[in-house]
Length: 234
Image (tube, rainbow, N blue to C red; front, side, top):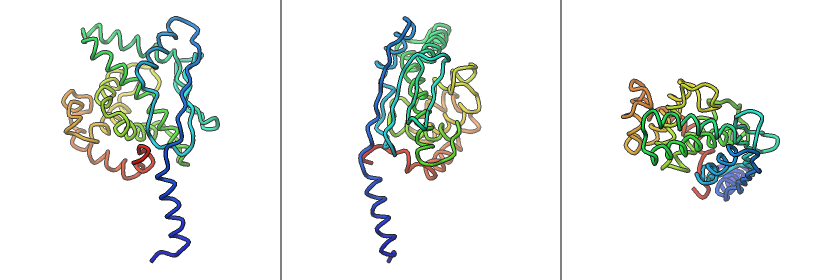
């Protein structure tokens, strides 16, 4: 039998882990331009800035005008910032792609929602990383993002993979740019459930030679940090 003190600690840890998630607060600051107003409307209507993921501490999400198009996580303030200018940049880029490809409006809208979900969940990943006392990096944040997105918003997974793939080759779009990062992220999404998310591999959003290893990659990530990226009440 475990030592009584150890048993008490384990019991406390189990109880704390099962507690409801602290509320995630979201605030939309007043936009200063028509483009920023449109970005605010996109964010609010998409519902992308919401989560049921259990958080170690309360986290604020603020959408606002910024000097540069970006998203960020401030550990000291426990605050995620989503800049209207970045949302607008993503919107204009995705609109250009949709017009070039003559994409159906509903599919284009789903892509945009997917892109916004990736931006939010990546910053949520930074939050989970630092709030759990881990060394922060974009790669670590993406691993958390893949776990939280599949747990929190499974209907957005395929559009998120498509959006990340489409934007990977476009520079300067914050955490949506980068071919290698896109391949790693979409691989984790696909590996979460290859049957459910088969379109990710079928469409080539994850490299064909990597697809067979994606389930293993996802399982390794889930084993390492999955207990820190679960929905409240799970």
